[in-house]
Length: 145
Length: 145
DNA sequence: CTCCTTTTAGTCGTATACGATTTAATTTTA
DNA sequence: TAAAATTAAATCGTATACGACTAAAAGGAG
Image 1 (tube, rainbow over the protein chains, first blue to last red):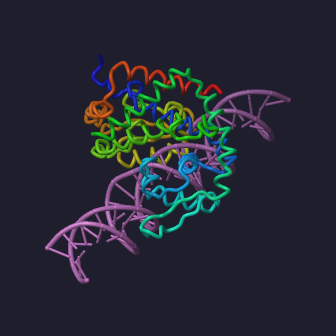
Image 2: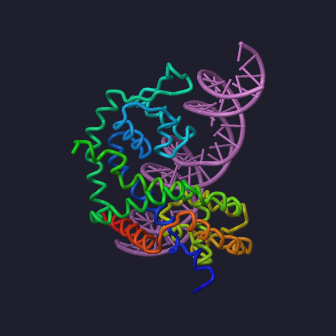
Image 3: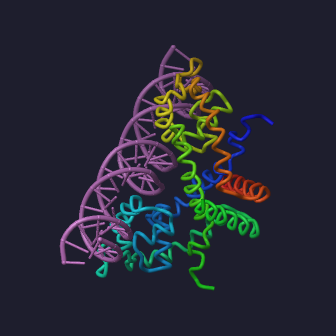
């Protein structure tokens, strides 16, 4: 066992995670282009398709992103008229983020995407479940320490 | 079963991969700061600690990055005097990338990092192995189609 | 040998990602 | 209730990440 074994790329766990993240997102790109969305914009839209209304703080807590990333991204989504950004009346520090009709309608077109990506990733059902569980375990472990 | 179930964030596989990538890299950051490296610079250094000499093409093939990302990154590593960039004499299209003594020495300090990150991720041995295999399977599947 | 193609880096524009700081609104506390 | 502390979003600077394009060098066919 060599002294620097632990520093070899093939022994890193984060490296294939980093690669998978990049490469899967690359696979999303042609489908997302059709909807005029980037991957990060897409997961914001997903959150809104589920929740209808949110704010920067809440969204950031789910996506693990901060206002420094979200503010410009949300402005872009507003430009595309997929969302509306308005100050909350109850608490003007809060920004209310809502889907527009157009943003809501996009959901229909998006339905094709998970199918296509699933085909690309092409794992067995049980592999997928284990992977999924392990990833969320890592996230839980990391946030703890 | 709801019609839009497949578009919920909790049913996405890429989403936790994307989160894990970001969050693990966030954990790396304080350790990498001590070495004055970013995560991407770190994996470039890892490649060089293993291979001593490379070029943009070869490096990009391993890290799945292109010259548009690597060129500025390598220039920064050269500024820090961790690497040297020189045109190949045999083929002037090729850029020879080599460690400096200083870059080589950094390896010693880096040894602590995998230990610390391992503690953070905190998976069982067999979980790690399965995760690792599944991730490389995804990468293989993706590059195929 | 010369033109054409291929290969390798580099450049440019856009979009995250994030640490650090700022601004404005609200809440707490003395 | 006025000052201090907290909170939410925005701003700023730096560093990827990547599609599209450019420039320069090398290789190959006629």
